[in-house]
Length: 204
Image (cartoon, rainbow, N blue to C red; front, side, top):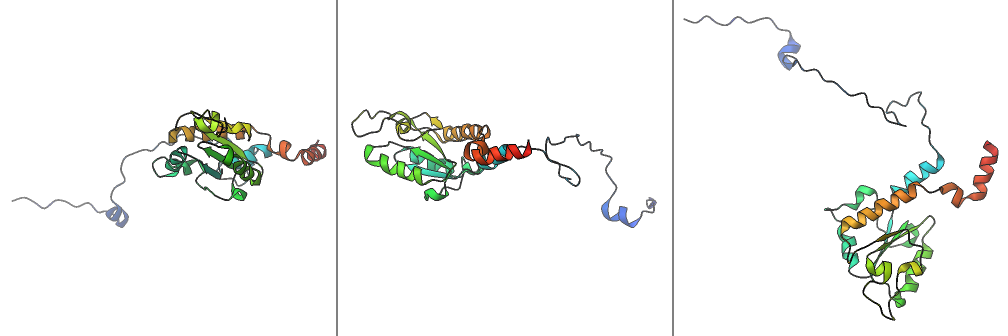
């Protein structure tokens, strides 16, 4: 005949939660370069240009100038498979007053060129242009009297994307190249030279 097991007295907390596992957790000592979650008493140093560029490059609002088949790839880039919102550029507005970057996707004819230029001029500063595809960059296969041989003859282009048509990954690569370019801009000095000069004189 087996004897009943001997029960050790346990407290209420151990009975409810169980014994603590003999595992030791080691957290690596990682510190951010310019930010700490516990910012009480800490100071963050940066430049005004760097802060403006960081805000601008991560909140680009495209003006989708879809003129031909490249516009289908532009639509696919905004869909869930490629998800352009990871780069903060999912807010596509068809109003030029609310856009930062014009994506010229497709063949630009002379009949449409003046309308493209008018929409570009209505966009507020700062603004950038992406030429998406061979037709927007160089006219593509259309060497005719009706097709503009590159949108750069009409607008200042910041990034060229090759392909006929380029895949959505190529557009995302072009968007990242544009973000890199924005990071190196002198935002305050280029757009507000008089105000920047007075600020420099006051500080220095």
